[in-house]
Amino acid sequence: MTMYNGHATAVTDAGEAPVSINLRESRNGLHADTTGTVTITSMDAWKAIANNPVFRLRLPDGREGAFQAPSGTGMPPTPGNPTTFAVTRNDGETF
Image (tube, rainbow, N blue to C red; front, side, top):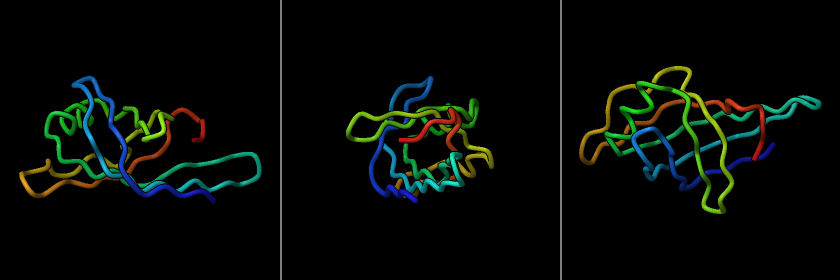
């Protein structure tokens, strides 16, 4: 199992926004699932993800992947109160 907990960039139709992510990759034979959470403060990026739940996450080292917010994005962020929502890897790849 591989884990990543730290900073990333959400790449959406509205542009790019810094996020914090906590991702875990679990393997079952040849199959791998990447799931976790995204914490976001940008209202524009949050709206873009709420309207189109498939978006990209870019790690600081440049690796990038498609993710989906399958359980919704929850309440919008407000100043000083980010929002956190669940995500799963959407493109079948692994970091």
